[in-house]
Image (cartoon, rainbow, N blue to C red; front, side, top):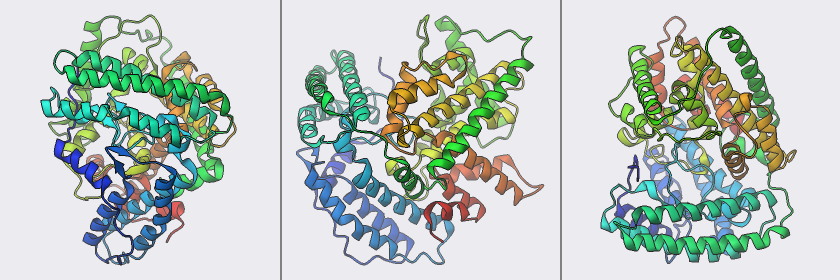
Length: 552
């Protein structure tokens, strides 16, 4: 049964998107303007350039195409630097930095990351599930089929469009075979798994639409066959791959600071995440001791109890935010969270880390599922900034989106949400420990101190209650994504730390006059952008941005 997605993209918009990619790239030689509206116009030009050329509906990631972008990038950067933002409101200067970060993101991809040459998973062409962040996590090929972008039930026009795009899979993989010249062993091996998983997703999708859209089902099967052929070819090349996949500490630090605008180095992030890991473990053991005479949490073992628990949890969570004046609650928020409740899955084994938490108590994950409120807000109340209203490239949003969702778990606990659920407090610290362990595993991969398998074993070792087995789907997919997208691995914890710093400074400036609801509403209005930029806009203090960028 198909779940209706939260957002839709009109057919015309997608057509225009393809046309924009296939048009000649705008010249970067025109002198830049001096006003904010001119920055917005420049940003639109930049996004047209950033999109790859489309050849018969297939994006071009050939070596020559990438060299062409590499040759043109300095001209775009020069134009951006020519903007004089002196006297602009901080919020408009913040937007300038977002464009600057995106350009650095392309620079990093061209010089270091090169997913089109190193990572088979980059060419995944079909995604059936909705991401819980503003953009899909990790680097992915432009023009891919994102099923949640379409309204359900499908119109005949949408069904025809999806079918036509799925039938391009063979050409996509043919180009991939020419482009994938890298020697990153772990990316190659995990990438094969991603392509194989796409095959299964296409098969399932074909069955789901067979009766209503037989031509679409046939197209899905054709794409599945092309996917299987690609996976087989990838497997024949595995023995030739022997290189390290991590980008190295210096490259990692450059990307962290100049793209994600995080004011730390690889070593500093490692120290901070280790500190949070140990704090989470210590806090958990004291909570367990405090609750030692209470009954342990038991997993719900039937669909009725599970559904009732989760739906009640959503209601109580939204009611808490409203009655406790945590933030302004809007009518769209509760339906957005309720739409993401998963169906009960019978199992005697682990269902995955986050599912295990959800089957024990609904509240910890409802806090983290603030993600869905944010996506609904993006849809219902688009940001006033045309630049922030778009999905930032290179996952620049990560430490805000993931960091604040992680921060929410302790914020609502500290505000009293779990005062009558003492055992649920234990889950909060387990979830934090899990993100720290995952983050450190990713850091060690990019620091070239561990390979992929070692990182999954490390993470499993440091997650309490045996909830994260090294061979389980959760950690296997997370560590792969961190390897694909340097900087994402620790964003949950580092973003949380930065949010704590923001609250501290914001409240200090209002000593005795701090109002949580006012803070949260302003925080939400600023948008899902790097916390360092939010810190600057909300406090007037640019030090966090300066520490990351080296600018003044």
